[in-house]
Every structure is written in C-alpha cells, then in structure tokens.
Amino acid sequence: MAQYSLEICYLIASIAFIIGLKFLGHPESARRGNLIAAAGMFIAVIATIFLYKSPEGKPLGNYVWIFGGIIIGTIIGTLMAKKVQMTAMPQMVSLFNGVGAACVALISVVEFSHYNNAHTGGSLFNGLTLTIILGTIIGCVSFSGSIIAWGKLEGKIKDIYLPANQLINIILLLAIVGISGYIMSLHTANVNMLLIICGVSLIYGILFVFPIGGADMPVVISLLNSFTGVAAACGGFLYNNQAMLTGGILVGSSGTILTILMCKAMNRSLTNVIIGAFSNPKAKKADGSAEQKVVKEISVSDCAVLMSYSKKVIIVPGYGLAVAQAQHACHELEKVLEEKGVEVLYAIHPVAGRMPGHMNVLLAEADVPYPKLLEMDEINPEFSTTDVALVIGANDVVNPAAKKDESSPIYGMPILDVENAKNIIINKRSMNAGYAGIDNDLFYDDKTKMLFGDAKSVLQKLVAEVKAN
Image (cartoon, rainbow, N blue to C red; front, side, top):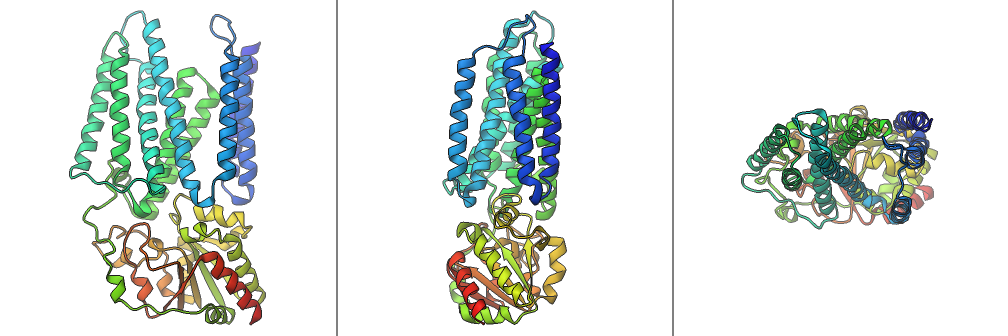
C-alpha cells in the first residue's frame, strides 16, 4: 500500500513540475509557477522519507541525518536568497547549479560502490552501468564548470586560453569515452576507474569554461544548467524515481532548448560551446585608443528636455542598470514620460546582463508591464522611428563591431540596432570597456551623447527634470 501511495505522490509531484514550468513561461505567472514546483518537490521529498520501502520491506531510516541536512540546507539557502543582490543572481545560479551536479556525481559513485558489492558476476555492459557512468561524467563536468563560471562572474577568475585548448578538450572527451567503454567491458565493478573518470571530467569542466568570457557567459550558464538536469535524470533512472526523472528531464530539455536559442541569438555554434572554442585569444581588446577619440556629453536637464518632447523613447537596459539597482527609477521615468504622451518601450537583448532573462527578471521586479519588454527581433525595426534611444549600462549588445569588425570577439553576434535611432544617449559610469573588454564605436557616433554617472542617481534626476518640464 505504501508503494502505491509513493507512486501517486511522485505522479502529483511530476504534474506540479510540469505546471510550474509552464507558468514560468510568462513573468506574470512565474512566481506562482515557482511555488507550484516547490510544492511538488516538497511532496516528493516527504513521500520518499516516510513512504519508501526497500525490497526487503525496510523503511528509509537515518531520519536524524536526513532532517539535519534538510534543516541546515534550508537555513543556508534562505539566508543566501535573502542577501543576494540582483547583480549577483547569475553567480548564485551557477553556484547552486554546481552543488546539484556534485550531488548527482556523488550519488553515482556511491551507487557504483554498492553495485560492486552486490555484483555477482557477468558483464557490466548494461543500462545500469551506463546510467551510473553518465551521471558521474555529466555531474562532474557541470560541477567544475559551474564553479569556474561562478568565479568568472565574481571577477575572481580571468579568461584563460591554453595554446591547444580545443585539442586538449577533445583528447579529454576521447579519454572519458575510452575509459567508460573499458569499465563496461569488465565483469567486475572497478570503482577506481570510475574515480579516474571523475577526475578527467572535472578537468574537462574547468578547461571547458576557462576560455569563455564576455557576452558568451549566459550561454554557458544555460548549457551547464541543462547538464545538471540530464545528470539528475540519470539519478532518476538509477533509483527508478519518477519525480526525480521528470524533474531532470524538464530541466535538461528546457535548458537545452534555451541554450540553442541563446546560441542562435549569439550567432554561435553549439559545437564550439561544447569544445570550449568561444573565446578568441587573438581578439582585439580595448587598447586605450578611446582616450584619443572625442565623445559628446549631455547634461541631465538637456536630456530631460529632449526626452520630454519626443514621440517615442526606447530604453535599452544592461548590466549597469542591475549594478545600480536602478530598475525602479527606470520604471518611474517610463511613467512620467508616458504622462507627457511619450511612447516608451524596452529593448531586451537575449544575453543582456549575465544570465538568460536577467533584464526581464530585473524589470519585472519593478512591475514594468511585460508587453513593453520587446525582444530583439521585435524592437529592432522600431529604432528607425525612435526619437531617443536611452542605453543604460549596456555595452556589447549595442556595439556595432559585431557587424563591422571581423577581428572583434563579438563579430557576428546579432545586436540591438541602436545606431538607427535619431538620438542616442548612453548612461555609463565611465568609458571603461564592457564585459567583452572591447571598445564601442557607438560612443563616438555623431548622434551619441554620453550621460555619465550612477544609473540610479541619473535616472532619479531625470525623473525630477522631466516632471519640471
């Protein structure tokens, strides 16, 4: 009876995961989707603890360790979630993703050890062995890659490109496949060989993320997230746990689809992502030549007058908006402009910020109406009929080098056509290069005027000036 109850709970949890994921497809329902999925996970965990029975009919036991871990994890997770700034959200996603991947890898190693003790002979060439090996490989790659991604986003790790990086990655992949095949050809479960796969996979994960930088990082985060989902699905197969399997498949498939969409937005090859070939070590970086070029500045009051008497204004949010926590001030500027009859839209680039959907989440937090957030394909035709394009902290996603400079590391990446607007105002703290480390010729365009200062402070002053006009 308990087994049937457990299966029903897993079914309910799986349905909750699916419904939650569906609701995550729209900002207005995303919060509710998160709560539904969390409720499903709660049901699955509690059901497993109290309803699971071993083949011998024994309950799970070890309740002190289980609930001790749950309590400690809940406290740590809650504190981190409450303290994390929106600018640090990508780092937290990478860190949590890595922790989940490490769990799956550890589970695989432990279960292989149990399999070794229970194995009575015969070939290891079977689905169980393959599932354990895949969980180990994918979990280790996602763990080490996510930790490196976290370090890069935190600014603790620099982009590193080894002279033969691609070749080394391919050799490591071939070694992983070869050792996996060797393990499956044996008649004894060799845990030491699996640990070797762990080590090689960890190294591959590190070298895979090391050279990747600039605007490519959102794609990497999405890909690593999908890896963890696939690893969790392997755990679901391993334990014949339908809830774990469903959750892993949903995360893996949605992450993969998002990765493909991000690669399309970046005009990158998914193959290049896998072998770690995003970065170009010979790419032209910012060389200080910006100091010899002339930029035109604009005052807050002049900017306010220009925007107040415009028919259409497009706001282009970037990482600088997140750093300054200026999303609420930005929404306030939008409202006061609309009160004067100005049409205000937002241009959202797929990789603006540091993770997929970063700007969408940021602006949704400030209650910006979702219909105003237009994706790149929708908003680009609007720039030619726009009086003012206000760029707040964005750099690489509006850099014309992506269209014109073949030596640029972002060449070929689709960008927002800000240069087509009648007037371009760029708010930055300084003339420093963006995340890709390259200069932006848009800053020196005849139609461009620089509005220097912290985004939140500048926007608050703009709101006051617009109200006064």
